[in-house]
Image (cartoon, rainbow, N blue to C red; front, top):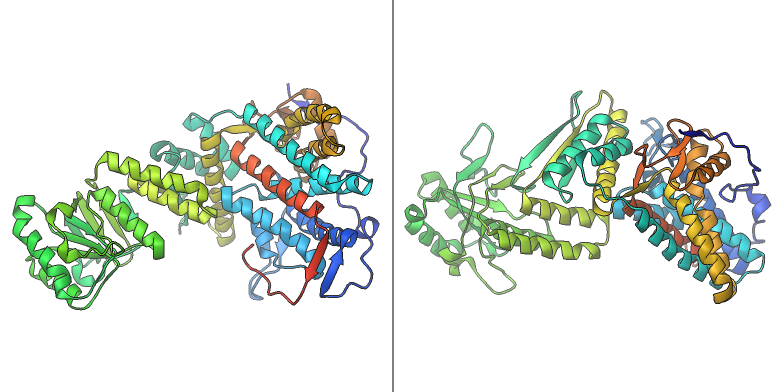
Length: 574
């Protein structure tokens, strides 16, 4: 039976609660706006800024959390009420004290970095980082060596990650993913649609979350490869009502060369016209970096006279990504990519370089390739190559673009259309749906662990055992670092309970008494088995949150100087 969180325990000042600033650190005397601050004063400045940002973000942790009201950018709009830690962090571009601002920006960067990597977990990161730094600062102030404590915290991190991996359970059914997505989104229909799309299209499917004018939340599946680039000229349209051009059973060529002269395209077009009956093709589709002037005029003229149906489409993307997408199109259709870097020209291409598809259509803004004739072996090899580049992606945007390429090569994407009577509610649902997509994908990739902070609480015995072992086998201070991390792992469970209006210490005491996997269910106010309650967290999200928090906290702990040389422009992007 669930256990109510009513146990009364001694409630020493929580290490995760910020003391009044004057009680913690007196401000350094005569600090100038520019110059160098050393040692204890530098760490005190960082700590104050660290706490200020973390205290702001931690109120959003948990399913029953608080909100933050922010002044709008425009005086004509009402204040914003935000409940997403990463968004809040990004909106705070500075605090008045420049020296403390460095610590605040460290937390801001950590929160946004986790959002960029996995789409969620910013509040957990802030809470863990603050708790680690708070505990470690007290230990160092008592005389411990900061570098030894840092080594101990990092050793404890490895032990905690191993414990998290051991308790992870794979998500194998649509029902399991749906339960997690519903919990993450706080909306039954959104969670059900996310699970359905991932079940049909796979865990690497692209799920676009879009606003929709109406009252019903819905989903849509897009067949084939679709990109947000259209035709080079409206004269390629054969449907003047919808302003679309469509060719059935086309032959296709893909190139990153620029085409502006008649001789750039005429020799190749003559080959296609001579063989079009034999190939039983409806026309020619050209994907190119740039088509203009006489070359574009030749294609338009032949299309309008129906000598050879033509459809010239702009290459999607920009820069290096544009070339990679053109290569994807070649693989999908079975064409050979005509590369400008290799010195190749379209006029030198042959019929053997052509690809095929069942249909290609384009309008002014989009195009789609349906039923590409590329070999499955080549497509599998191409998707494997894209997956290999995923770990090198610098942020979530780049990873999303790589997933888009995989999804378009392997079958399509899903669109989740968010509708609501009011703009504010629609924006909130869209934000929660985006986070739920990230959570569901992360759960499908690495599995799930008990939520509500239970997974972190379950790691504490392993860290305590490691500390006991290192008391006799490692340099002084290492075991202390293990215990610092063990104590800090209580912070997420504590703040989830506090934010929901319960006693955090009582909740932790009841959870540890009930056994591993238990924590306070913020929705019911009772301590229960989180696995059985289906209150789960994706392993990937809490693992990256813990790794990022530990890295940032120990960096602040071992900082010994601050340098400020000139007035800095506020940085919008963390």
